Image 1: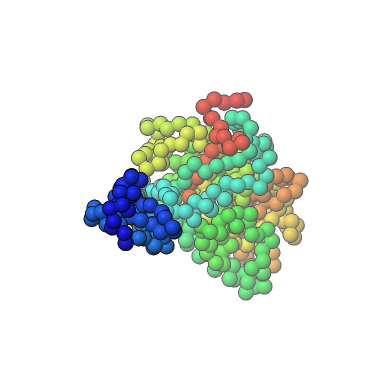
Image 2: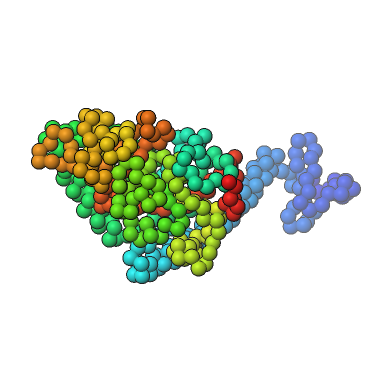
Length: 387
């Protein structure tokens, strides 16, 4: 350590001040922290360690602040989500008391179900969208369907009826198996929607349950949500090419042919009062499709239309008595009636298969989807009709 006057004068002439360093002969000269004129020699390695430690401490403090901010944001989001759930449950409770059913909005926390619902909106043939004799309105060309929002349909009475129907189908499938029918490998199954529904839905064993789709207009939607799908009202909108039953599809491209536009929110509309509000805002320019759980059981298949249609598996008539009931399973005594009809592709059907059930207790509306028609990723406006 040098403390001579000449050395100190030389340092002062260089402008050496507190917290500065002066390099000479590989050493560092630093003014003592006390502010005295004492000069100490600093090891460069220790100086680097000190700088690194200070940097690490600063980074740690910054990380802790960021973590605290993130935790606060997450807590606020959780509190907001909890408040939304409380609001949703309260609205559902009132709806169950007043209407007998409730529509529960799908939230961010329902991620697996939402992914399945989004997958159900993926048509196998986008180029067919907007085409076909069943399309009654056109708002311009479109190449995709995008989920806007969705609701879980909570209808205790209809669910009880469906549960009883599934039990009957399961029992009859067991009888068919005992009588030699292969109920595990049924022609025509599985349906195309099986993969899309795999994540968000659980199927009941032994009834060949499937998730299928049913398109409708906003004018009829509230009635269907309230009463359920009913074969007695078949033919009122789309005809009865395959009997007086409930018509379902495995491809949303088919159901999209039967829907009508819901362009904007109307506070006086009874459907809108139940669907929209503080939790879910009307997204504008939407169409609706019902996600339906169906017990297909042991189906009969055909490629023909009309009351004279025959089974493509054994050529027997599929409507031997009337247009509201299917034929009996061939070779089974006492008789068991087919549980559903699969209209397969052929001369009468060029694009999409259809599924028809003749007992409303074999179908249940699980979800309602509101979706947009899009072209090149852009939502189509439904405010004006382009003939």
